[in-house]
Amino acid sequence: MEEIRNQEQHRHEEDDDDDTISLDGSFFFNDNYQLTNFTFGSQEIQLFCLHAASTDFDLTGQVVWPGAILLNDYLSKNSEIFQGCAVIELGSGVGVTGILCSRFCQKVVLTDHNEEVLKILKKNIELHSVPENNCPTSHGLVAEKLEWGNSDQINEILQNHPGGFDFILGADICFQQSSIPLLFDTVKMLLLVKEDRECKFILAYVSRAKTIDMMIVNEALKHGLQMKELPGTRHIVGNLEGVIFEITLH
Image 1: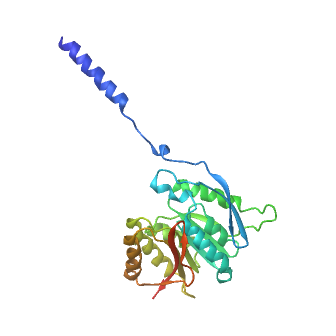
Image 2: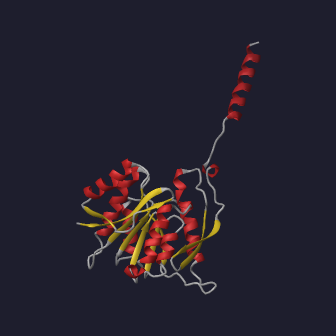
Image 3: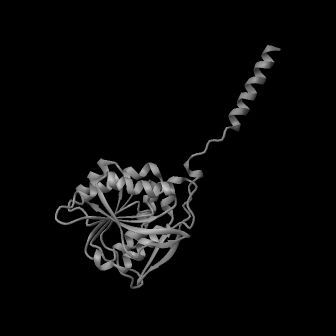
């Protein structure tokens, strides 16, 4: 009788094991990218992206966010400011801003921290490496992995691009409180490199939470940075208020 009870208990334990569901990252991942057209002023861009983000919060870079539309509209209207400059973008996602910049900038380094996002970013760079249908070729586009606050990765990028950058760009990248101090750590390191002329951080910000609004201002002050709103850039994007800030060293 005891042996039967032991066998029955063992059978139930096996059944419990069978009922255990193990989910890996692929459960949340969507790579059904669609070739999508974007127009900013006179510039037309085609690239692969999702029209809705994956379930995984870490894969927000698979879509084009409202802040990127806001920044790209500004860049297309003020392209002469960026003509021939070296630019690095933080949180590039699928690369819509960096690819636009490559039409008038000398060098554009696109960065992201997520390996899956970097794959689609590199695919979009390849898409624009050869001119097709008389579209302008994008020059000087490079993708690099960069986790904000990772000094080793920042130093490696600076070693690869020893001249530094004229502009740091960020579009809709401030939505997670824990990442904002690391973002400003990274920006401060990059701003300090350019010695012959001032480097500027151009941030397209879409307001979604008052706590984030205040945090951005406070982190800029903590890092000794001056933050000013660019006139005429405050607009409603995706039913939210967006604005572009210029952030520099004091």
